[in-house]
Image 1: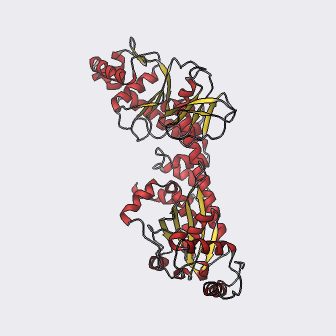
Image 2: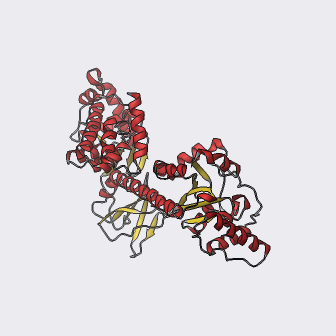
Image 3: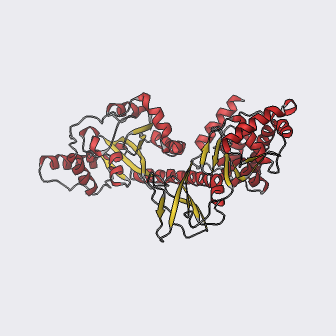
Length: 491
């Protein structure tokens, strides 16, 4: 039976006749779609009662904020809102977003429809898998991993015979696993042939945005961990994400796109027969040839991640070294001056004219205890390691005229809680330099990336420039315009 009738009410009447005939064991006026009949069979096998009233509530309202914050689709919710919610509101639909377990996490749309949706359990915190509430667009799209439309009496549970729904799955661009489903649901008389195409296109937009975010995260991971690869001194090795994707290799080429890693495995054999050791890093793994085939690197690899609001991160040969603000300031100053610094000069850079060399010597001594005397040398104080610092990567990219690369390497302001003169000066230089480079480039995508960045979210000039560049149909406009209006109201 096709699902293309021009009159949705008449089509729904036929579906009711089919439903009643199937469950009464009588001859049907037309066979149900194979998608629907197969879903009915799965649902009935899970003991779902067609007379069941509403879906199970699996999370309370108080639990939902943390679930939403932790879910990957939270990152693309502004896109979903700008793409679907205005349409759903006008067309008397609600937009629903579930997790991979079929639990509704978000619901937005036509205000007049929220009360009827409440009455049938279309609310956040309820589970909509086929084994929980039978055939429905959200549960069935997760079951078949494809976009679906479920109209009226195609729902197994009679409660939803007055509804029509279309849903599409959203996949993790990293692993390919299903992250959840996007659904639009409404009264059966609002059915439109384009509903499935709309949610399908929106799901693809969401996956594309997640893919861009993954590429940015990969680049930052690569920048931060390249010293580990460089420390192999040209011997074969690769950087691997926590999910097993290889994002950099030495030599270039000849590596698989992905490897399978399991906990506690310290070596693997690649498809070409090579045996590689697996060394865990703070943010992934390093593959390298066994020491019998390659000497251990003589120089240590030191990674400094000091930009953004997160706690300063120091990695020494892949091992995390816990540091507070003052050691991070010392490491920043030493990284900026590879030739070395005296205690007096360090005191001036970090404390200004009131700096005390004796205090600095004590702090250096404590820092040497953390990272080792072979890494922090004396006379003068200097770092004897292959240093990779996010702030240095940003500065190099800006000086080379590559604002996109600079933005990818930056997670926010440098040590934002530091008041040390050397740090403050560099922080201002990087913030202003990155902003000016983005504005000078006058590229819509770069402006949009900066507007979503911690340094640019509250920048009215950037928003003005970006909105002037975007077309009226661009799905990013509503969220950006709302932010612009809020900033203008605060001026």
